[in-house]
Image 1: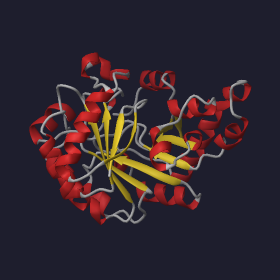
Image 2: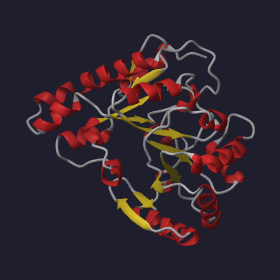
Image 3: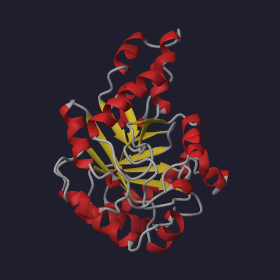
Length: 304
């Protein structure tokens, strides 16, 4: 079911800017992009991987499409669709629209005396696409072409997938610079309760994607969102899945009590920095990895 006028208004109020003519793609300024411009900090991706926060384009080609209705998702999961039965915009139109939307959303910083002049000049020309704003990007029918179009413009691309489209992942002709697979549960039982898959065999499909992760030439990452009292258990099972999939990195990060997730979870479900560090340490020890970086501001620990 297409998004309603109310949905559009609500998302626009939250900072989303839809692009193209089919209303399935959007951009939104990341919190850390704003912080970086005024010298108040940077995203952990800059600290971990060298991605400049002020030049990062946060976007999605598939805002309302996903296989999951995760309890910890900060989006409005009531609008989620699992299959693409609509027309869609071309990749070039989406990218052009997102870049223009980002420029418009950042225009207020040009009158801010605290803005860094160099970063102001550079932010108008983003060079990294964080394809992770909302929804599942692998459901966009032209995801391969989108990655190719970004590559032709000398963008790096960080693509975050829930892993429930293993056949599409396997058939990608153009790989992202960095491919994330979300692993938010150690067991099938916890996965069903926390991620609420809207398709059959979700756990099996996720495991299929994890098994092919080491076949990619791009940098690969398993991302874990930790929710206290829900999925911060069975470190040995996480370790087993990490060993099996053998990613370059593992990001273990805290669920943040923000957005629509506050309607489903409690403040107490948000782990502290020490909780994340201790849990990451236990997993690292079990799978022969080590903590190589962490960001206290974002409550995330990086294993290699």
